[in-house]
Structures are given as C-alpha cells and as structure tokens.
Image 1 (cartoon, rainbow, N blue to C red):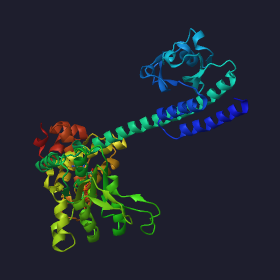
Image 2 (cartoon, protein in one colour):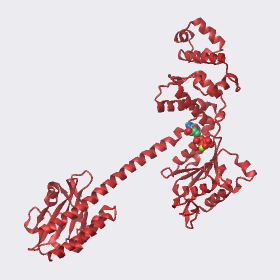
Image 3 (cartoon, rainbow, N blue to C red):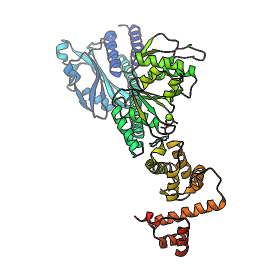
Image 4 (cartoon, rainbow, N blue to C red):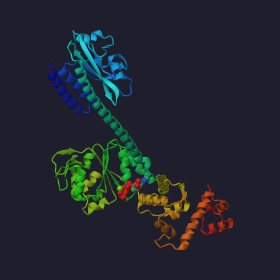
Length: 511
Ligand SMILES: Nc1ncnc2c1ncn2[C@@H]1O[C@H](COP(=O)(O)OP(=O)(O)OP(=O)(O)O)[C@@H](O)[C@H]1O
Ligand SMILES: [Mg+2]
C-alpha cells in the first residue's frame, strides 16, 4: 500500500475508533468494536486488550477478537511474556516473526492452526496517568517490507484512545459506586428514622397501633390513617412503607392541602409540555415517581371533588394519563392516605365522595390523641429532650419532677408536635443539666398554676419556682429532707416548713 493511502485508511480508522469508544459506556462492547475495526481495515487479527482487573496483579483479557474461548481465559503476570513485559516497562514490543521469538508465550490463542505462514506481533502499552494499566496486542501477517514504525505509531494512538475510554469508564464506575454507597447509606438512615423504633409510646393505645401496622404493612392494602393534628400520622405512614415489601422502592408524599386544585392534578399525574400555561417541559407526576413504591396523600380530606373523581379512576383502573397527554400510564403504587378531618361528616355534607372513601378506607388506623395516652407523655418528653440536647450540644440530664407534673397535667391540644416544640424550646432556654417548670412554655405554666388562662402574679411565680427547686433537691436526695436542705444551702427547719407549705409528699422520692 503506498504511504498516503495507508495513512488515509489509518485516519479513517481512528475516527471510527473514537466514535466506537464514545458511543457507549459499556467498555467491553466498545473495545470489541475497536478490535473489529482493526481487523476489517488493517487485517490485524487476532487481537487482544489486556487490563489489570481490580487490584489484581495479573492481567486479564478485557476484550479479544479471534481467540478461542480457552484463549480468552488467559492470564499474564507482570513481566511475563511479551504482554507482561510491555505492561511492566510501559514500552512497546514488536516481534517481526513469532516463530523466531522464544519469549512469545502464545497463551491467548492457537495461532499454529490459524496460519501456515509466519506472523508479526505488535504489542503496545495502554497508559493512564503515566502508568501502564494493560496492553493492546495484534497479529499481522509477516511481510518483509512492512513499515513497523508506522504500524506501531498507529497502534499507540489507538491505545491512547482506549486509555481515555478506560479512564472515563473508571471514573463513571467509581462515581456509580460512590452513589450506590451513598444511596445505601441514606436508605439505611431513612429506615432507621422511620423504623418502628422511632415511634415512641408504650401505652396500650399505641400498642394497638403497632399491631395494626404489623398486620397491614406486608399487604398491598390501601390504608387510611386518622387522628388529630400532630399525632404522628406521617410517622406511621413511613413505618408502613419501610415495613412493606416496597421498602426499597420510593416513598413519595403529596400534601393535598398545600396546593391549589390545578396544581395538585399536575403534581399527582404529571403533565406534557404545553398542557397549560407555565407547563414548559414535560413533568412526571408523583404517581409515576412512586412507581413500585408507596404514595402517601396527606390531608386527603382537603382534596377537591374534581380531583377526587380522578383519583377514584386511578384506584379503579390502576392507570392514568398525564395532563395534556394521551398515553395511558400504568400505576403500580400502594396508596396511604391521612386526614384529621371527619370524613363521614364530609360525606354527609357532600364534600367528600363516598365511593372514594370506601376505596381509601380498606384498612384504617386511628392514632389516639396524646391526652388519651398520658403514659406516653413522659416517654416522649424524655425522648425529645435527649434528641434536642444532643442536637444542640447541651448537657441536659433530666426533667425536674414539677416540670414532669406540668407536662402530665396539660391537655395537649396540639398533641405530640406541641409537646416536641415545648421540649425543644425548653432545651434551648435551659442553662443547666435539668429542665425545670419555668423552662416550659407559658401555656403550661398557667395551666399548672390555676387551671385557667389567668396571668400569674409575682408571688405565684416565685412560689412555683421555689417549689420546683425544693422538689428537685428532694428528688436528688431521695426524699431525705436533711440532705435536700444541705443541697439548697438552707436549714432542715426551713426545709420542713416549706415542704409542709407546698404539701410536698417526700415519700414519692424514696425509691
Ligand atoms: N409517637 C411518636 N414518637 C415520636 N415522635 C412523634 C410521635 N408522634 C409524632 N411525633 C413527632 O411529632 C411531629 C408531628 O408528627 P406528624 O407530622 O407525623 O403528625 P401528623 O399526625 O401527620 O400531623 P398533621 O395532621 O398536623 O400533619 C413530628 O415531628 C413527629 O416526628
Ligand atoms: Mg401530617
């Protein structure tokens, strides 16, 4: 072949090689395509690319063209044979006549059977960051007048393109690994956060709730979670999801109250580009995003009648269309819903569809309000004080007895959320190791002092503070008045007097 023609073929091949390498992230397939090009346009055959696999010190065949299956299993150690030596030294080797070369291992193929005449073998290193990570080796028919320099140079360019592709593939792989690890870690965290163990409460009422979650979680049943605001409905929805077979698939939440009617439908079902003003790109809805997982519709009682009809259709037919779209999309989601509304009343006055209600309410869990499970108040208060002390690096150790009494006697209209906020605030304003009554919000103070919303007078506040300190000291001293007096730097006589004044029962601290 005259030089300019050969050069042109080489260039054409290089373009094709770069396209082959860029066209896919599947490295082996791309390499195979490159080797095919070398055969087709340059009669380089058979050919192999070797690489170190992972951290192994052995070279394995990453792609091969024209080898027997046994040949593809070949392994080379560094420095072993031509391939091993090229990778060790980072320098190419040309064997003009295989038959004359004792170093030639011919591990990768039975060339003897392939060709009667003598063969040339050229092997170039694949180098990334100045380190040889493998090799590209090709066979050529032996020719006396072959321009080895040209062939060598050409193969070196191909090898450097391969190196680039390998580098990118490694980067993508390690990024994927990192994302996979991160994902696994985050999932673990979520599972932990929404695991049962994060729902606090040992009261009988809560035990019933746990039992119901255990019963219903594994099934695909739609569940309606009911209860006052702040009782933990969302927590329960999470627990159902993370204890179901869908746990590894997404948990997607939509709050039906937060969005206006037009937006909520786009949010649920998605929309095509141009479906309405402002829809400037196609968007997947939450039904699609939750595919295979769980969709949690919060505040379902706030859904408009028009949207209720659409939701009912999805539940009946298990399919839907995007807004402005015609393609039908299958819905594989488990539906959990929650409300603090009286849905039966809403049905009676026509603002909630009865047929939808029956679909959603296949199984219902009622979360009791906090005032009906007083035993849980202390557990929750301890749990939140620990949680917020940790988060805010406060050395808080406990909640004083008077403060506990205040927490226990309050009626908690805002349920667990209100309790959580009260404790968070107390932790923030508390300077020492103990949360006292006066760290709690004023609503609790007045409730304790008088049971009404009247303002507290100075003397009442001082008394309340004094009683607080006395009870605290008595608690530390396990009801021993003399010790408690010492702790407060006062006399036993005064201690006896105050205990009587505030009608404190010292026996309750003796255990
Ligand atoms: N049993 C519980 N154990 C621990 N934390 C709880 C419990 N119940 C509720 N909480 C906490 O109280 C807060 C309110 O809970 P959640 O949001 O689940 O209530 P909700 O019933 O969905 O309220 P809303 O009806 O207002 O949406 C959250 O921070 C939640 O973590
Ligand atoms: Mg909620």
